[in-house]
Image (tube, rainbow, N blue to C red; front, side, top):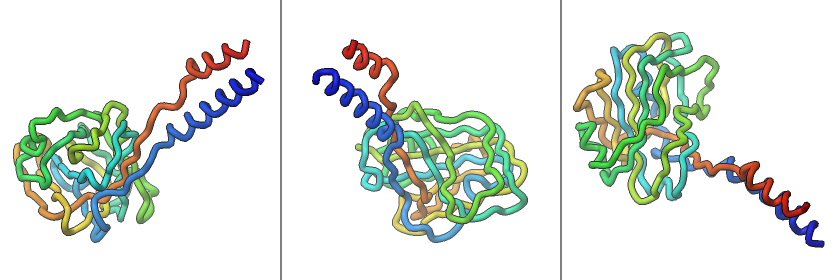
Length: 215
């Protein structure tokens, strides 16, 4: 009987691990209104871009597993490649963006979640959710709002238009310079996105400890 109970526990842990690894999803950024080229505007010389999502839209604490934007259309022939791309996530107590990139960090420490060349591939269809980042090193505290920054230094190929909302959101900020201090504030806009939280599955070590009890 004891072995049956322990075996049941091991199987339950394995199943829980699968569920936890999947994570929960939150759609943020308001209602899709129009397609917009920023931040993946391949006709620009370079880019520094910020968007922000409000805590009540997310309302969960944990490790972020994925950030996705909602695709609208290509401009040009896909794919589009964005060199020298960096992405950061940052907590902020700001409720709306200003035109100053550093000010929007609100004295918090930004966390780099991607660095390298980034591609918007061919084959995306209207309203597809497209993975922009798969961070493994950022834990959202569910107290502050969440800021995302994307910059790149050179682009070739197609631009990717993604859905944005047009009112009642914290705004979007862009500059056609990867290191610009200030930019053009697109007030009221929101980047339509889907944020997925993920937790590590039960490790083989943990299952091994349970199995050892059966011996």
